[in-house]
Image 1 (tube, one colour):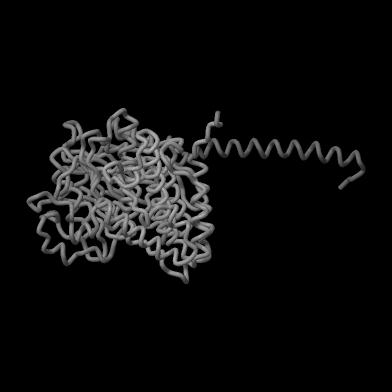
Image 2: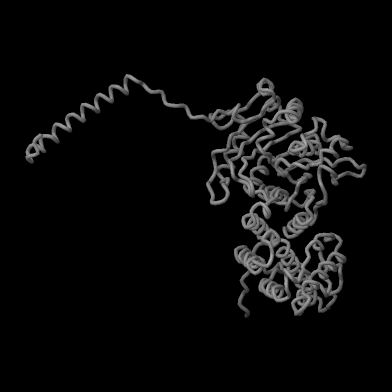
Length: 498
């Protein structure tokens, strides 16, 4: 009997993938690692599952049609895209990988555009010798389903790498990465459920959609009947989002390419904006060139509360999210603190949102949680269907002091997340932490949402009793005099006389 083969663990896969980054180190910029590593990981995964299925058919049916019958496979891998062919080459390997990607896209419409954006044919950056080393390294891991210790291991490893690249490449590599603890917090606040339509209009690498699915699974729900939508303007990041969802086994999704503000692509058959039960996003902070010109003549009526200033697109994204909520919809969005108190056009937009009673909560987060910026951020919870007892009020939570200090970034711990979620659910005042504030009070403050106006976290200075302090001082002086008397007595005995 053959010994049972050890299945691939998440830790093994993570360290293997990180080692592939070390192979590339020095040859290319670290912010580009992800494209090449993700591309090869994806290629190897498609190949191994294809071979696994074909071999199973051969074993069970005694036939070889599994190698050429497209209907047997979720993704059909043509001969020139198979790992055995690519690893047999010793020259022009980059061109062969590019060709493999092209053929995979031709055979599988759902992969269209996902792989073609990765160019391996750059002999200066990626000489054949380096690519052979990289392919050899990937050959060591078996990614067929039966060899994975957990069906979601690839998606998990993928998230690990996205985070590592954010760490390794600083802002350049991490611009689309939201720390997973922050994502988990927002998901717990907006509580997605099975059967819902969920959208992230600035989808990045799709982490927010994936964590929404994880949350539903944790609660015992079936994520199969979820509708996941997103839009992303960065082509490479869009491809990563698609691969990430597929590696998580989430094939039923719809991620569009393009600029959400300038050209929203998630539309119904009548060309109107699709509406969602949940919208979740971390748009770029205070984006300067956000599309003000196009917004002036927006055909979708998204900016009815007013046009944000040219140099800060934050409230353009918030208004887009509000416009895509259905009548029961809830949105959670990460924003820089400036949106809470900046005046001018943004003040007017805040007023409009508050007058329609769409804002449910404002949560201040600790500083230095995000890659590439130390700016403290906040979370806004928007709700088109607030519970009757919450109407006419907004909950302010100051969670800025609860975190674990990290070397590069601060981190939200599980207890910090639970504390915020619990306060949101209880919806009652807690001294120096949170407060339910009426819209009347906010109106009196000119619709300023600065958390410090509503939640007082200053420590009270201890009142000093001057008479008592003076009495203690006299006692201490008396004590000192007695000690000195004893000391001079000893000195006298020792012959040290004044």
